[in-house]
Image (cartoon, rainbow, N blue to C red; front, side):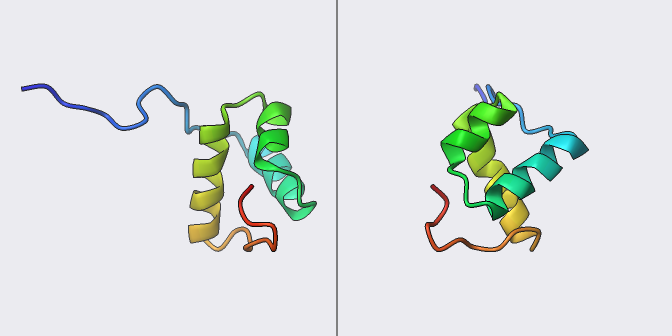
Length: 67
């Protein structure tokens, strides 16, 4: 029997500096793609970070949505 680890190829560890920059860019209504480029991360990692931060009430929903 084999085990599949979902999203195992991605890195979901973020430094405090990355979180601060992510939140600033999110509040400035930057796109997920622009945030990913600035943080030099995969778009999937930033999408999961946005979901994590939203669920933790650390960011608010945006009118434009996640993208």
